[in-house]
Length: 192
Ligand SMILES: [Zn+2]
Image 1 (cartoon, rainbow, N blue to C red):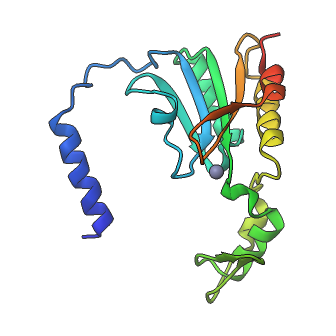
Image 2: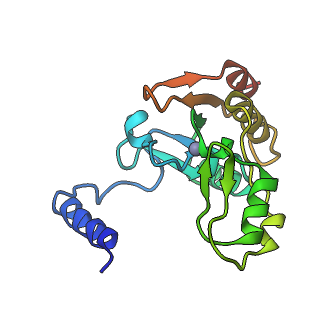
């Protein structure tokens, strides 16, 4: 068995042994949702003080307001009653290290894991690759405050998002664990 698979199953066995959350209702008890990056250094349950059943956490590469993230947020509000949303990007995000052109080029030459050094990303391995990456908007980030503001604006202006839901924009600092407000984003996300 893969050692990771084994570790996960052992950890779950311990979790089950002390489990007492079987009667939680489905709607989040604290009525809010967080859209944030999948980065392994971020643990929303810890940085935002969440327990099981408290809030929706939607994660993707960058914490970007993709069509699919918006799909989840709309379900979160419309069917499960969240009333406030956070968009939380972070310092040192991997999404700042490439752009669409770079990702598409890497994928076109090889599907294997690429490597990065001071001069940028490189494919180390044989092909074949695929040009299918040309059809994906990778939603990379140039500037964290701008990406937070852009995503708050996209969510706030989306026709399926009601006007009375505040959307807060923050950057998580991976060095300190602190959430830092992006005031421009929160202003865009305020209830009008
Ligand atoms: Zn990230």
